[in-house]
Length: 481
Ligand code: URA
Image: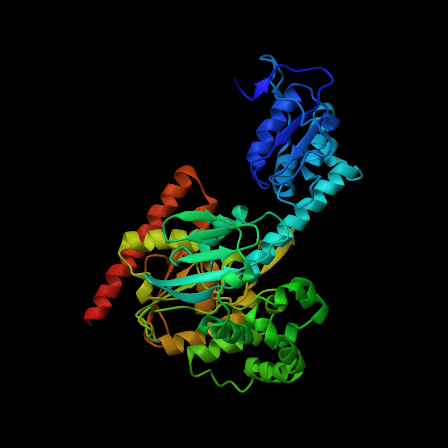
C-alpha cells in the first residue's frame, strides 16, 4: 500500500513533514497534490511536533495523481523564493507556498505582480531567511577546545529560522580543514574534516565560553574596525544587539566608538603618506592601506586586501605575483586570490610546477571596486588613475619583498608595475627590466580565461601555461646566478 491513494471528493488531507526545513519533501508532495487538483484550503501541512488544528480528524491519506495529469508549472523565480521561504519559522509558510503554486498554474505571470499579497509575503520570507543566513555567516564564532584526538572548534549560534542545514555547505567549504561543531537550539552540525554529521538540538551551556580564540577575534576586530567609516546606525543594523552576547568582539564596541575620532586622525595621518616615507614592514603597509582613501574605491563598503606569502613567514620571495584587485570573495575573506580566479590560478601554477606557497601574491589595487546589481556586488575595472594612485603600495611591497621576478597578470597589474598601459599580446613571454634590476613578466589574468569557453579558452589556457612555464624556467636560472 503506498501513501498515495485515489482522490476523494471533498476530502481533507494532512501532510506530515519529516523536518521543518525539508523543502524537497514539501515540493514533491505539493506537486502530487496540485496534479490531483486539491485546493489549498483542503490541505494541512504539519511540521514535526505540530498538530493538525485544521482537520481534527487527521485528514485522508494522500491521493495518487492521474497518469495523464499535466506537469506542474513553477517558474525559476518561484522556486528560488520558495526554497528559501520554506526555511522561515512562520508556521503558515507551507500553506502560503502551496497557495501560490496553485495560483501559478492558473496565472503563470503571477510572480511578476508586485502588488499581489502572496507574492509580497513570499518575498518577505525569502528576505528574512537570507538575512538570517548572512548573519550566521558573519557571527558564528568558533571557540577552541582540546578534545582527546586533538583540536576541535565549537560555536554556538541562535538562528531565527530553520537555516542550519541549508548553511552546512558554506561552513564546510570555509572551514574545510578544521574539525568543528556548530550548536544551535534547532540541531547541531559536526564536521571532522571529511564527513558532516547532524545531531540533536543543543543548549548554550553545551558550548565552551571564552578562550584564546576569542582574544584573537578581538584583536582581529580591532584591526579591521575602520573608525573613518563608522556609522553607528548602520553598524547596529548590520550587527544587531541581539547577536552581541555571543560575539567576543562586541565588548569592544562602546570603547571603539568612543575612540573612533582619535583613531581616525591617526589613520588618516598613517594613510596620507605625503611625507613620502615608505612603510618599513609589510604589516605597516597592511595597516596603512586600511585607511587609504586616496581614490574613490577606498571609500566603498569594502576592506583593503593585503598581499600574502610566502608561507615560510619570510618577507623576501623570489617571485611576486600581481593581480588586478581583490574580488568579492577576497574582500570577504581579506586574502588575495581565494575566489574562482584564484582557484584557477592555483591549478595552472601547479601544472607549471610553481609553488604558490613560496611566492608573494598581491594586487595592483588594494580595494574591491564594484557596483551593486540587486544584492550582488559586480566587479568593475579600476581606471588608470586609480591604478596609478595605488602604485605607492605595490611599490612599497616590492621594495620589501625584493622579488627577482614579478609576474603581472592582466593589463591592470602590468600598469601597476610600469605606470603605463601595455598590450599583453605584445609583451608577454619576455622579460622587462625594472629599475631595481629585477624582471617583470606579463601574462593574461586568470579571470580572462574564466570568461571564455570552448576553443578560445583552451587556446588562452595554453598560452597562460606557456607563460608560466617560461617564468618557472627563468626563476630556476635566476636562482643559479
Ligand atoms: N582577481 C584579482 O586580480 N585579484 C584577486 O585577488 C582576486 C581576483
